[in-house]
Image (tube, rainbow over all chains, first blue to last red; front, side, top):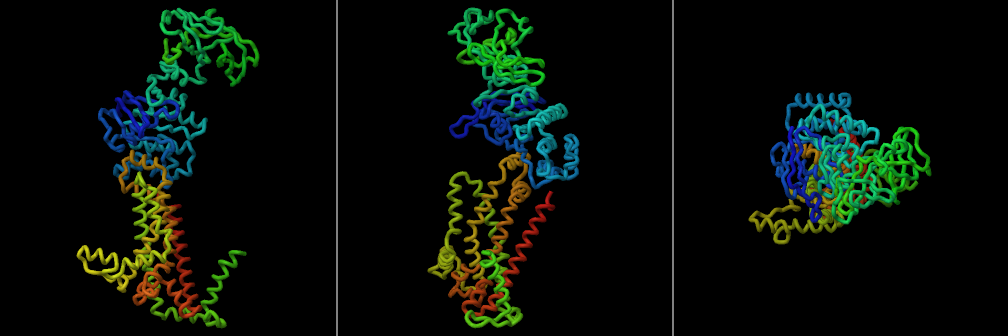
Length: 358
Length: 278
């Protein structure tokens, strides 16, 4: 097991800069998730750590050793690929033992380790099958088994759940988390799915356009996003953004003036964006808990009932605002709603740069 | 209907002819197995059959290994791969007759022939090549292998490109060496290409004709029948000696060999695909 450190890591493909300088410390035993929209460089960053790509600049350290010039096999890592990379002509057992045969371990030791991993993953009955005869979820577990038998210092996962259907994805996600709690090997996991990131990670690294936007625990990213991009990416349904103005100690929206003493006397032209998550808007009786200044009325547009909750689209000052209402009763379209923003959960971002102001 | 007329009728007719005597214009005369008896006692037939298998048994492994090695390294070339592949493919587009005459010139005695000129320049003695009973067949075979290479390389490269990159990446992370990757990943996954080329190349080599006809003096498959393959012998029986019956009997032998070989190869490779490795 080992820590991983990236220092000033850059990667160019020709003239295209894909990774534009990443600094990151990953502690031993930590489960870190790289997340971001497609093209943000998260997979490239993982491949740099694996040694499948060479860094254009910067240092990559695994377990205290700089590994930039080391071949992938010398980095003591194991990787689970998006397409699993299982060899179709080999049985599950031979697939799992491939790396051990490469390391020239004795046959008995290979068999023992493959069996142990197969037992842990519930693959014991499938060892003689070929990948073609397995379901998607089973293949995924074989791919993890192949990584586990090598007992590496670091696990790398490259979007391992993206080929599974939604239900299976949730199930395997839980299995991965359980597995990590058992083996406690440092893990780096790439996904574009923020729900996966939130549920799996000890810490999330949110990337955009080759740069780290924010690093922190899922809770930290959810509650204290450093900018509008992070605020919009983390959380589902996404945070609502409403253009506003800062006037003295008040945030001015169409028809509302929210007191905000913390931002008083801040300079600039006063253009800000107010952010509020759909679940932080209270409705009906609940709205009376909020200070009067935070209350407002809106007409329900599209209503999406989901059983235990409903998503209601409304408008505030001409901007679409989604409200998440907990409970089985839900309003009808066209109904006038009494709403209020939870004052503790209001985010304010600089209008131009998007940087969080509180 | 089309197949019946164009494919099966000539084949059936050839089998009928093989038990007849016919000079192409006169009436056919049933002679039973006389043509086959004559074949069994004909030393030239046995030599020709031996030559045919020599082409196959030497040519098949050499050409496939060579084509694989070229394709394997060409696949790793990053720049100008398309051009190189096209150059290798070029012989496939050339007529066998033209190639044969160029190779015939390569093999001429000094000072005309290219190879002997090189040997001379390097200080070696001149070689007889096509004029020697022992060197002639390998010399013809080299030309045949060269001619077939382009097609084989292109097929192998297509097979190599179909192997997902992540297989090699996973192997690199697992620390597999060159030979383990070749033995456990590349070759097994290339099996469909190998089967295809084994069959087409075998059939091509067993049916070798135009190259030999054009590269040897007078189209005789000489010297002393040293390079003569079965198809050339059939051609000579049929159209030089107008002995259709004997020609047809030899054709039937060739057909049986081709059929047996194809079935054998298909069975071997199917067996391996289903059970063998794992």
